[in-house]
Image (cartoon, rainbow, N blue to C red; front, side, top):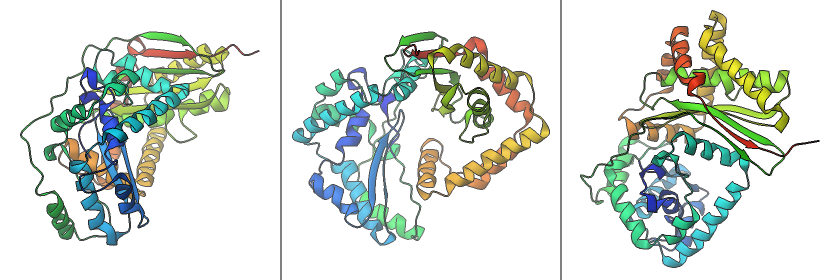
Length: 383
């Protein structure tokens, strides 16, 4: 996992981190693209990558006998990729299709547009996929400049979950990574400040209307992060008995899809609620959402409610850790920003230590009606 993403791009580099994630498998000084893709997958493994606003990640799942094969490939693609011109032009077309596909899906587009509205004028506002204009202008030299500035060992974490002795894992990593040059450079990110709530309505050609309402929130190292995580779970988490689901879907039938999310970043964060609904239900849905937010601001959870909420999120965390891939990615991200890895038991103890008062304090900060921003993709009027 590399600690660089779309927020680390210069204005002319919009989409560069994601473009490199695509191009990194397109050939190295040792292998052609086919041999990169076949190196693990010919042995039943799975190779993949993703880009976020702050990270780029290459990851794989494979049988334990192929540990060294996989580690060697990771070292090769991360530091020896050659970014062939012919492959660059093909991949630009692929990503343009990805952008068009994304723009054809308002339920996905509204998430990035809302974040762009919240962080307007800041690199966090930019779309991870970039823009066609900047994408088409990328050159190989642009790629290498970005890599030199961001892809350094000091800005990377290698995480592993599997059947291997730790000392052996270290030996393999030293064998394939020890000759990589280090750098004294430090990535300095522009801190987000001066949030201003805003409201925007966009006419949308689809039959379904889409809505997002939310606020800026806490960074990943803020002590109030965990209370907000619990509040988010109570409001619109994955459980069918979340407050928003019970109210807007089960009781009134206003929405097929409704959820809330909390996305922390290194210096700030975002809390938001999303729903898709018929155009005639927008105002009624907003009223119900604000009612639920007001209840959490004004009414302390009862003892039984609070205990149930903590048990619910603890169970969900435990289920997530059943996936070794999720555990590995969580470890990598945790260590990237603070050199420690918390176990599941550590998280469960922190959840158990939360209080009803701490939840109300956070609710009054983040759910303040005067600080909420609103974005609506207004659909067609239905008969």
